[in-house]
Amino acid sequence: MTNLLGAVEIRALAEKMNLKPTKKLGQNFVVDANTCRKIVMLAEVNTSDIALEIGPGLGSLTLALLEQANQVVAVEIDDRLANQLPITASERGFNKDKLITLNQDAMTISELPIKPTVLVANLPYNISVPVLLNILEKFPSITRGVVMVQSEVADRLAAVANNKDYGSPTAKANWWANLKLAGMVSRSVFWPIPNVDSSLVRFDRIKELGSESERLATFSVIDQAFAKRRKMLRSALSQLLGANAEQILISAGIDPTDRGEVLTVEQFYSIGKKLVNGNSTK
Ligand code: SAM
Image (cartoon, protein in one colour):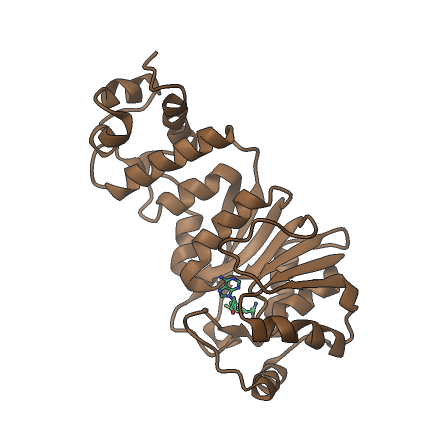
């Protein structure tokens, strides 16, 4: 016997709540308990974990997390869903003290009542990258996680430098974590069925390269480099680095004729450091 939610339970719950899933909030709910268990397993969630879930929706993944984790913190922007979640969890036999539900926006959340150790989420697709970056930035206690995102976004997040999918989200996420693809998820496990493919991305936190001011400088370098992706760095970064952009790049060990897409986050960092240290070319 499973306490998790399947297609029948999800439909019944949605009907009871008179819920019409909205595209705006990326509301495609997983209706397959095995998929949820697999995601939790890929994140290696165990009884010592405090799991953070963004966008619990009707609770499919939340219940699978409650089976394994010590506690679950679920952040949901839709107040009807946030109100229903603890009811669903206790109706299905889960200890209500294990679940903390917050009716908040994950784009801007910066504090939680307890320190999460793992992120597990089927992210709202239109904001998956900024939400992931916000969580990596604000909650350093998270050591690893698995997120489900649109396949195209997953390819970008897991790309390496000099690959067509590599871009600013990858370089920024790499400041905090190593990311790799962890499998595809069939469209048939969602209700309503989305018109894009979904994939899982596993991440593991790494030691940050530098200080907060160096990170902010590095991120502005990344933003400029990818805003003018086709341009050589000496030109793409001329506004940011000033008249002696070329010398600064050379002193950072970067070929000024390279384009941003070939640079790893470590290389962006070597430029960012120069910015923080007053553009010194020494
Ligand atoms: N986890 C559920 C599942 O797998 O069935 C639902 C996933 S659904 C793709 C995304 C969820 O994120 C929805 O419940 C939606 O209301 C919620 N959401 C959308 N934008 C959000 C935001 N800015 N902050 C928190 N939750 C958000």
